[in-house]
Amino acid sequence: MVPYQGYTYYPIMGIARFNLYLLSWLHVLSSKSSGLGSSKAWWIRPTEILFMLCYWYIFGYRLLLCTLPTWYTRVAFVLVSHIVTMPLHVQITLSHWGMSTSELGESESFAQRQLRTTMDVDCPAWLDFIHGGLQFQAVHHLFPRVPRHNLRRLQVLVKDFCRETHIPYSILGFTEGNLKVLGRLGEVGDQVRILIDCQKHMAQTGESGLH
Image (cartoon, rainbow, N blue to C red; front, side, top):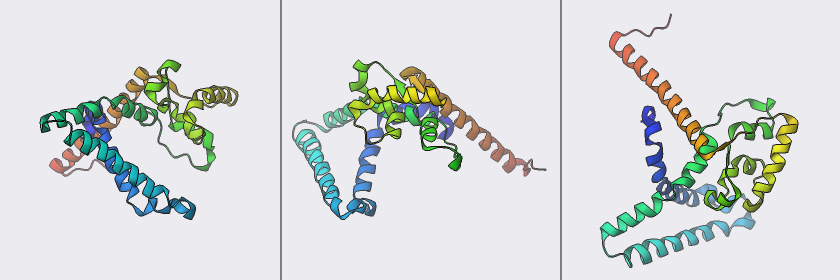
């Protein structure tokens, strides 16, 4: 499927929320989330499980099973209500999938690494409520404890820092970010196609082409 990932990107993002459900339960039920490394945090895991169960009671039982009349309506409602959140899934992938994944080791500072591997998405302030703060991924990676409503103000300081230190800071519009990610997906797909063609050639001829 990798050679065609440029075409399946948006359909998969449309149902990506189902994967988040699965990953959330796998995490909260795993040993890694037990106590979260501190005896003082024992209450976090059962609290998360409780609220996740409350969500499925309200959404899955009270709304889907008790309110909607037919299975056709239930399935349609679930698909539509999940697909409309696709822009958020696209948003979070824009900030990462189009950027470098090279490991440069200890020669690279923490700030340089975050700004090289993460991209911010430019948008006017009145659209912040749609992006949910996810458009400030690079800023968030630099300062993960800063609350979401302060990220736009912090972005100004990061821009000044990058200007003074000459560290590249990638910030693209939503459309340009999509084009960059699609281009990167296409590049990886082309590389896989080449590997597949080489594999077929070797299987047919018995030649490796290595001398």
